[in-house]
Image 1: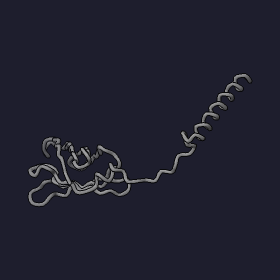
Image 2 (image 1 turned 30 degrees about the vertical axis):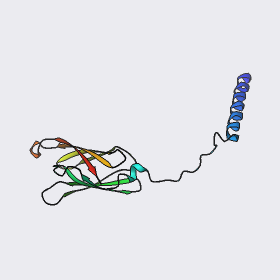
Image 3 (image 1 turned 90 degrees about the vertical axis):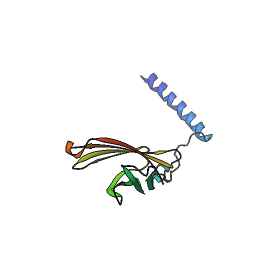
Image 4 (image 1 turned 30 degrees about the horizontal axis):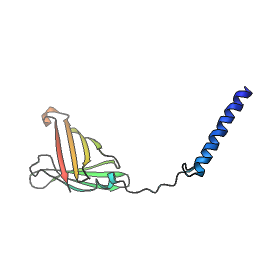
Length: 148
């Protein structure tokens, strides 16, 4: 037993010596430098007012996205006759791409996938709608692209 413990301590001493050498050579840092939070491009690139590239869309005409810390506030505007229809604000986590959102109201559930494409100049939005009552209409999925 003593021999096993002595062997184990010898291995630990060897590991400690190697780590000490790596630290001395500045290859390994014993304590990581503090990280200063910086705006994540995935967060800041989502922010803005996005307009559907298809002027004749029957889906979303405009999407406004603002960022507050680690939360995105997404406001969809439907393409209605006359003025855009404000559908309210959905909150989502910042710093992810694609961004998945889900809503559930009295008449339908909606699943959204927002994806920044290219160099962040195109926002692709997939919307899947499931109506809770067949009398509200058939379920559907729409695919839309937006530019600022």
